[in-house]
Image 1: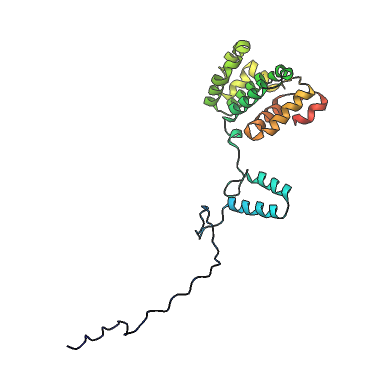
Image 2 (image 1 turned 30 degrees about the vertical axis):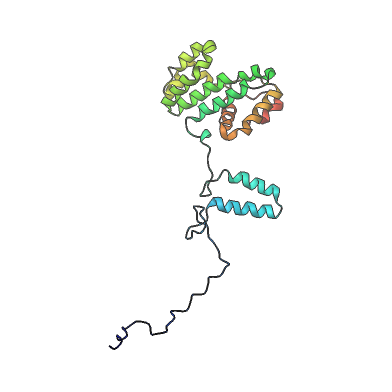
Length: 233
């Protein structure tokens, strides 16, 4: 019997197959996508990766101080490179956070300054409440009064009752007590050391609510002695 004829398209006898593909070069470049996974291509470099590249470069060049400043500034930028605004300083809840920040600091301060600094708490509370009402944050103002007001009940019970009737912006100018607060600067005679300690703290905790307290002090409080006026700006 004769051998079957060769099938069209089949390799000829002795054919060894195609030549092997040469190995890829050992030196390859891996691109990191925005997700941070090595080996993924096609996406732009993330702001976080870019920041890391810059800081590494600065360190290699010996710019330690510059690298430190750049790293601190980068903490305030989002993935898109735009500034991140601290939640503690935004929205109506900022007054509650800021007040608790101040209250806790006062209560943990040195005994020689605690009594003097504690005089800040009531007016900061009042002006925070009035700010909420004046911006029509009615429910937030009620919650603020309900949450923090009891701290002042022993001394300011009547004033708290009055504040409870202030629910609309126009009420502020109609009520003698609240009108007095809004139209006059509140004066607290802090000595130089207590004043300096206060503003150093507020500056240090600026992103956690310190800037909110500073704004209230600058707007509604009279400046203390001449040597301390610079800190109240």
